[in-house]
Length: 212
Image 1 (cartoon, rainbow, N blue to C red):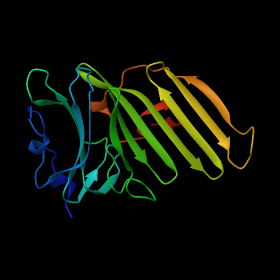
Image 2 (spheres, one colour):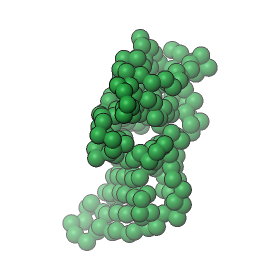
Image 3 (tube, rainbow, N blue to C red):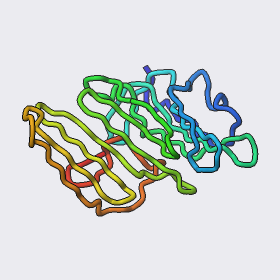
Image 4 (cartoon, rainbow, N blue to C red):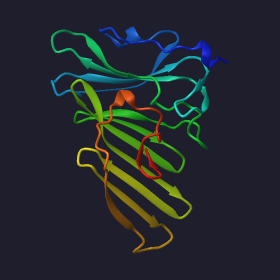
C-alpha cells in the first residue's frame, strides 16, 4: 500500500497528438468523452485517468482515503494543427473508489453534450451532477443537480448559475398526492466558479446547510 507522502501527481502542460502520450504503466484511462467544447467545430476530449496503485491520500476535506488517485484532464483541439492542448488538469475533483459510502464507487461518468461537460456521481440513495461550459480561457460551473432519498422523504436541488436561480423540491413518498413542495431561491453569490478550482464534491456551499 502506498503512502501519500511518496506519491506525486504528474503535470500535463505540453501539447499532445494522442491520448497515449498521457498514459503510462502507472496512469491508465478510466473514462473519456468527446465533443466540441469551445464551439470551433473540432472534437475536444475529457479524460479521467486512474493511478495503478493504491495510495493513501489526504483529500481536500482533510479526510484520508485509501484508493487509486484520479485526474480529470480537458483537452482542446488546436484549430491550426493536429495537436491538443491541456485546458484543465484537476487532481482532486473526481471522487475515488472508497468515497461512495455504502457503495464505495461513487464515480458515475463524464459526457459532452451541446458544448457542455457533465460530471456525474451516483450513491446508494442519492445522485449528484455538475455542468461546465467553456468561456475562454476557463471552464465555468453553469449548473448542478443534487437528488436524494432519506426514509420516506425525497429531496432535490437544481442550480442554474447562469440565471442565478435554484429550484428546491421535496415530498413525502408515502403520500399519494399533494405532498410535493417546490420553492425557488436566488443564488446571491454570482462569482464565476472555475472547474480548475473545484475541490472534492459537496464542499461548495450555495446556501446555509446546502452544499454541492
